[in-house]
Length: 396
Image (cartoon, rainbow, N blue to C red; front, top):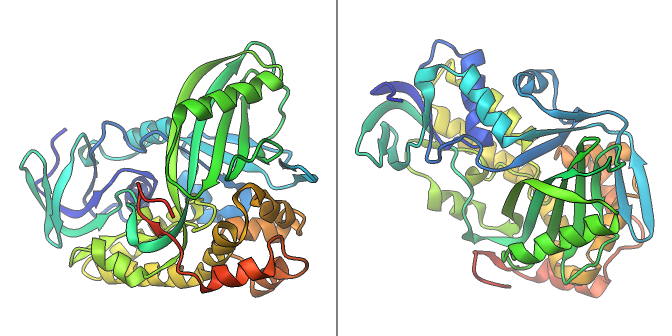
């Protein structure tokens, strides 16, 4: 659909961050004209985003309220070789197909610009692959994160399948981590979301040193897992992903390598992620609401506002990068599960704040108190080491 040749705000990238920003603008700054530009044919790509019930405040829950979501009461489970536990926190999950449908219903039709690849952007507008130039008083870059030699860390690699079972599967609540499975040179766990009595989402996930995703191997491991459960299944849908787990680096150099003068760099590309868990919903929601509120008053200052928020987020998540460094550089790959096994013995409120990236100073102290799950000598070497660059195709 053709859009306006001049906008107040051009949002580039229709993933979670860009889509939520568009919705927040529609809700909180309806006087501003905007469009959401996405290179693909659907918003959100092929993903599933999940979060805990208490990750969002009232305003955040209101922003996500219109989307159809999977919601569970009765808490969630974690399973490790030496420790299993049921936690009280309820869980939520949003499929990108529902995200796309919701945005198409909620946003003004003239703002929907899928199949519109942006090949140039600057502080005064964007240029599409078709050659169309669209002027904008503000441009917000919410495209996907990219590998970078300026950041260090490892990778979260996963393949998930929405399965239909021939008989009820018997899983009553989400299993956030089932790490009782084989640990093949990485921290591996299976993630379970019971969507209906005879439908379940099963994801095979790895905290790995390499970004390599061997889809056939992961499919076979899921098949072995469900067979061991006695389930006969058919695959309804499949998704894959390779996400960076950031443990350090030069954030200013990273931002500088991607920033265009006058353009606000937001979303995962701008560093707005949980560096260890890759959970993005709480962060994306808070950012969308903050940017929309600021846009009502001063579009010119948006790049500065987003830059300031990015720097604050980087400083505020330093502790999680430290833990990630311990995970990837101090723990033996096949023993990494012990880090999470120990973590899940801690008080539940601490665990909830951890996933929302809101750990208190006391939480941080408590996590590091007691017998460490890695050797002291390896921990010291990890702290002194530079880490592996987050560049796809390069192993540590």
